[in-house]
Image (cartoon, rainbow, N blue to C red; front, side, top):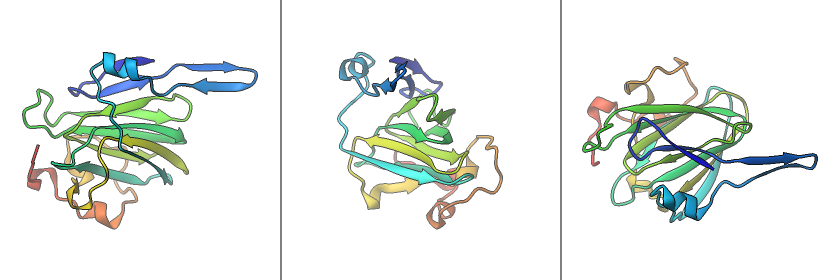
Length: 178
């Protein structure tokens, strides 16, 4: 497993090693010691899946204190553009964005620290994302920022959004608790 730093402090792109032979393949997505050796927290409390059609954009989502969480995401089917923004005011990478393509073929994972917003754009129908998070979902602490108000050049101008995601405040109007 290769753990690579990104341009956001505390955010890592993880490339697990896949073993393939004539029977198929085997992929280890988590090894406690390797995560701990990198200083990554590993106390997962909840995990879930989402399935999205092409051009669906989900995000930018995060939970605010006291239920902020770090998360680990990977794409189990299809292809997504995964985008993270650092919302931590004291971070040296405050408001920087990181993006990567996650697919069922490249097996990449992204470790997202507390205080960062997360979004993804599905690039294919039936794209399935798997998430592990460190806190249980808290509806009152579940927040977001309007996707097109961050400093990121999205490859789409009119994605399919949930009604909730159209109502998030712009980054400029976001009251930042981080």
